[in-house]
Length: 137
Image (tube, rainbow, N blue to C red; front, side, top):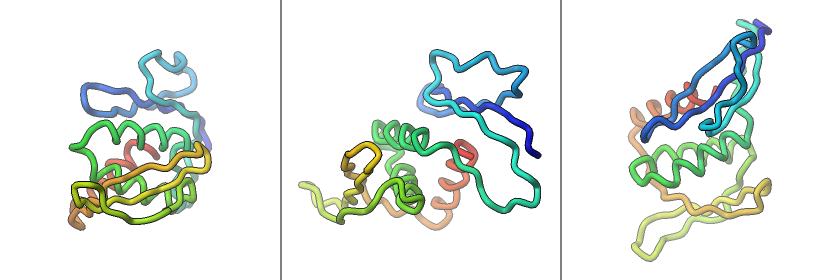
């Protein structure tokens, strides 16, 4: 607990891969890094989850927008960002194809995003949350 480590997110094919480094092994962020951050191992008594910095989470959100197969992950991440007050819900609407869309505004970027409302099953939601936690905690 309390030890520093570095985390880097790398794109490998269609997947994001997380790699953690001890400070003495940290070569600096590779050019191919999508994002990186420095953190500390939390105290075992701490129940609070320590997420990646908001800008890293926003970068992952942007990347998920480029892959229609991962729209459910983007929706869940958008809800997490709303919960963290990084984004706020502006409105629910339908797009020209009749699909439910969520308009979320990010004050940090002064940008509104359209997110497809794809409510996964409870099992899939848990799977997505676990994937995001592995990647971003």
